[in-house]
Every structure is written in C-alpha cells, then in structure tokens.
Image 1 (cartoon, helix red, strand yellow):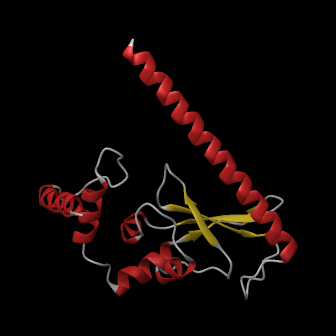
Image 2: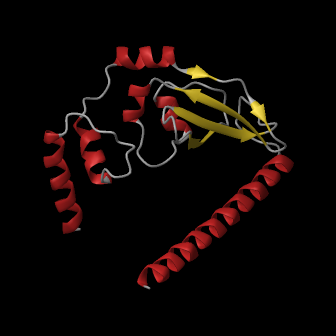
Length: 170
C-alpha cells in the first residue's frame, strides 16, 4: 500500500511540471495520468450542455446478434470519463449521452478515444432495455466465444514473448 501512495505522490509532483499530457500515451505512467486528471477542474454545467449538443450519434448497424452504433463526443469531454474501462449505462447517461435503453459501452475506438462504441442485443426493447430470451442466449454464446479467443490470443502472446526472451539470451 505504501508503494501506491509513494507512486501517487510522485505522480502529483509531476503534474505541476506537466501542464498538459497525452493521457493515452502508453509511456506515461497510469498514476501520473490519474493525478493529472484529478487536478483538472470539473466541467461547468454549461460546458456539459455544450458537449451534449456537440455529441454525434451514428446510424445503427448490425450483425446477426448485436446492433451497434458509434457515439462521437467532443475531445475535451474524454478527460471526465473513467480511465481504462468502459462506462456503465448510468455513467454515460450522467455525462449527457442519450440513447434508448439497453445499450452497452463495450469499447473505445483506439485511434480516436473520443469515439465510443456501443452495442445491444438485436430485438432489445428500447423502453425496458430487455432482450428477447433467445437473442440473449445467442449474445451470451458470442461473448463466451470472444472471451475464449482473447484467452487464446493472450496465450500466444506469452509464448511469443517467452520465445523472444529465449532467443535474446543466445
């Protein structure tokens, strides 16, 4: 725990030396980014209203299980979002993003962090956010498949890294 406080204190010290940083630069330590974000003043209500007005919603597109849409927010708005994770429906609604019920923030478009990716199960009731049971099962199967693919990808990356370390030793 002491190491975390020490890292946060060092990060806070760096914030004063860094009036602006690229919080998406992987070389910037997470504690520095978090300290920088917490040092920024929260947006004023009129700023939030302006951002809501400037937010752009794509048309929906779909595959056999989900419908999708992109939500493009003003770049400065990104600094108020949680770092390193997707938002819950309650969170994105609190930031002025408005859509019918059942949408899930599932990813960010990495080249453009201000483009948020949303999905919901096909056939979801827009008033209740509830998906039809047969489609909910299809979605669950799809998500399990994606998780398995990600697990296999991580194993391959570890194996590749281990082989590279072995090759570097000789």
